[in-house]
Length: 142
Image (cartoon, rainbow, N blue to C red; front, side, top):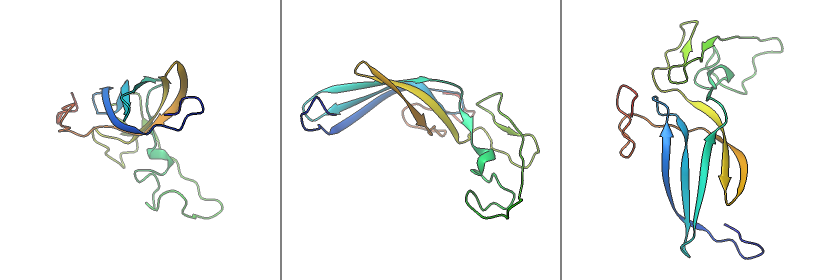
């Protein structure tokens, strides 16, 4: 943390109170960073829109050849996928080629606010069943 022209103060602790979708994807909440001098900096996360699924962009086997992003496939190579993303807790491959289960890598834009200022950030995070603190269970509920 930097205040004016003073030397930056490193953060030495972090705590969080987060909210999740039933599948463990972050929905919002607060992060609180602490400095060695005892200052506490709360950062509030507010969802700007529902999470995005990156499966069609080459992540999570998004290409037929499974080589991922950046592999040369020729000058005219074209592939298309169709996904049902109407329920962010259950992304479905409409072609039937992939089963993502209840847990899918999702990317999400958030508004953040700290110290009277706001901005935006990208979050790619989520929980798996059995998380010690938030206790997301096997059915995807917490």
